[in-house]
Image 1 (cartoon, rainbow, N blue to C red):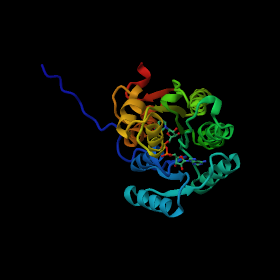
Image 2: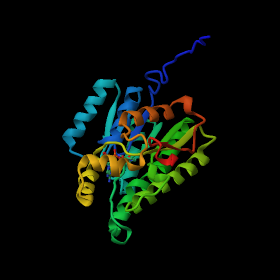
Image 3: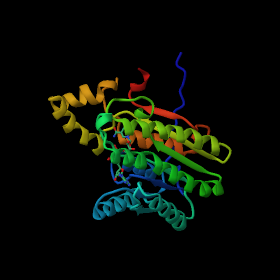
Image 4: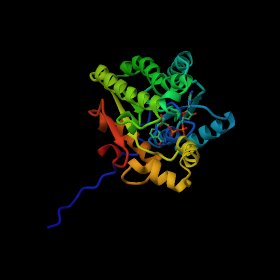
Length: 274
Ligand code: NAD
């Protein structure tokens, strides 16, 4: 007997209309993919990140034209608490609200622990972890006033497991998973959720920067690096896409995900199932 299955669009379009979303590190890679997905769902977008002013201006215009939303840009440096405070204050002053905060900005540096430059450690901890503490503590009063908030921290599979030579990155990503849990617990009765997403490898400039270095270090081709080094731990042997992460983030921002809070969700093709 055939049992009829009801099909339903998973996320209605413009489900985030009227919301304001700030995505740190959204001039490139995963952050840009998430910003585009939130805009496609109707949210106004505050971009942030490094890059050429002309290129960022083009990205803003493109998102606004393609999805019919408002866009703005903050050049705030995620190593600077003062600059982060100015970004959050300007967002709330301009839009009157901040509904969705995506803590995504991040960098990587690969070196053995005993050769790891101390200044790189400080920089990675500042951008990949402390910036999320500052954005979150400053965004919470506005979210509490509205009785609604969605915080998504872009952690990593390296927030759940370690790999050699990535001491600062792994420490920062484990740290942001901890921050996610505490934020979720402190906001659980306020209509606010906070979750971490933990991608395995996603093909972005951050990963591209590692391929040639690894090829030289191991004396192998780029293709071998991708399959045997980068994706060695990733059972499905494919990079996740920024579109997949965008769709997941939109879902976490909707009312349908109101009971999901405090989780660290792997998006890693089975890596952390080992
Ligand atoms: P990316 O290099 O493409 O993008 C990083 C973004 O952060 C850029 O917009 C950059 O301008 C911004 N940024 C860097 N330093 C900054 C600073 N001081 N102030 C403000 N912005 C700054 O990298 P990506 O791969 O898209 O990484 C985005 C996030 O996803 C990072 O947190 C990264 O750790 C995480 N992640 C990436 C992968 C992957 O495979 N690419 C896997 C797991 C987690």
